[in-house]
Image (cartoon, rainbow, N blue to C red):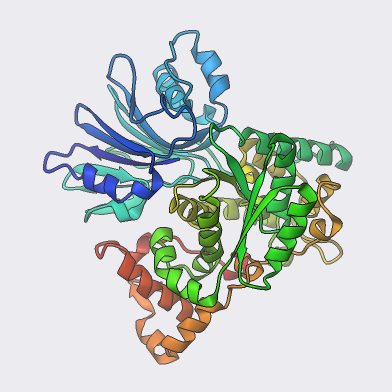
Length: 499
């Protein structure tokens, strides 16, 4: 995992070095930069695969094509086997597949990639930026005086004439608009002829493959463990493949997640680590949390607090963690979905939820882990698994009063976990960790309703939604460069849908 910076067509003082310095937390293991014609790439590296050979930016043999990317390509060995017919590989790194793959296929390489990535290529045909289908890895780009900059985080940018996020599943070249190369939740015909038993077996097999492929690493891999269904299933599927599995949880004293995670860890026989934090520590950490998160969205900040603490803990023991993000979006895990009537309405809402992950839970997972030089991988957002989930009949997915949410996932994974964990009801992340109300109470003490009404409009047509959100916004404004607009911050569409 890494941070990338791109400066294209820059004729004045090159800002790349200063921008790289603001992303150092994303890549504590090394850095590099390279120029081709009018394009300058910078890279700060977290070494996961082929530490000596995977340095970036990476350049081809003729030094006329370079790539810088943040992420992991899980099918790089399959692509390498195909590309070796015409190309000689010098490293074991997945980055080199992006070089030779682009030489071979150009932009058609993008739909062939199975992984999480934000990437930039520069060569004879100019500059290309691309982002994975779900937006697991971030990438922003903008223009200033006719030159272009791109970077992994907003805080890296100097004042710009324009600035925006590259949407998930899109690519972009200077002079044009972003274009979509992949749909995150593709419309597929329902598997009407497949029995429930066959679908359950296929779902479990697909999830298992997704978890196993994300164990690809030259460094230790662990797992966030809240004791909820999603992270516990990931841990259970990892356990047969990891000799000494490290699990991590964090919460306030007496939090439900702490006890549930202990049950799972004992059942699986993991090397379990937990961090218990206090209300005072939440208060003191909020500036760091919000500055790293780059958001003031209230549900997102609230859930980022426990992830901040658990990431800090995990980074002391491993460099890669697996996480449960995405399960609620593809398997209809949110209680409010019970209000939707009819299969098409549910499928449409799930597709929208997956699309919005890039601005919500995936941003939280990326920023909180990378704040500590930690790579987070999300097996529930494996492309094959999402495609399979999109083809399941709506009646197998929809929440109902007579069965728990994510029923289809629970049925597919029967026997992997103790019954009390398999049947555990969903809790919002911050509630399970016990810290949901801490910052809200701080906000109520410091901001009156009258002050909130006077200050809630922070940009044209951008209204804050609560006293708590104004409290976070004030911290965001202090932590972020003053030239950044709050309109760049993604928002949760429905507070009841936030985890």
